[in-house]
Length: 128
Image (cartoon, rainbow, N blue to C red; front, side):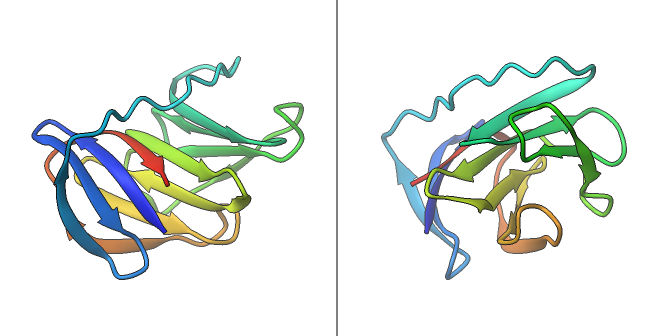
């Protein structure tokens, strides 16, 4: 899977499987705005009934699998977040962006792994 990552220096294409930055691309990265009626929300993403929100607190994530009716905290080991994306066809595949590093979960946010590339300051991410 590949991601587009908007940074202060431009948009980078990243191969998430190989953990490689493929280079700068000329593509807009404007994720859908997801409204979440919780305090301290930095960013949120949705795929079907799965909604994940980044908060300005510890742990930095809240995950809902019922369209926001109930929430569980997650991401206790993650650094503060900036952006996230959920795969449209697989709500267990989640990309989380900290200041300059990406983190990937393939089990709906229970376990995370930090990806190797370091990027300029991240502003937004999209999966593609």
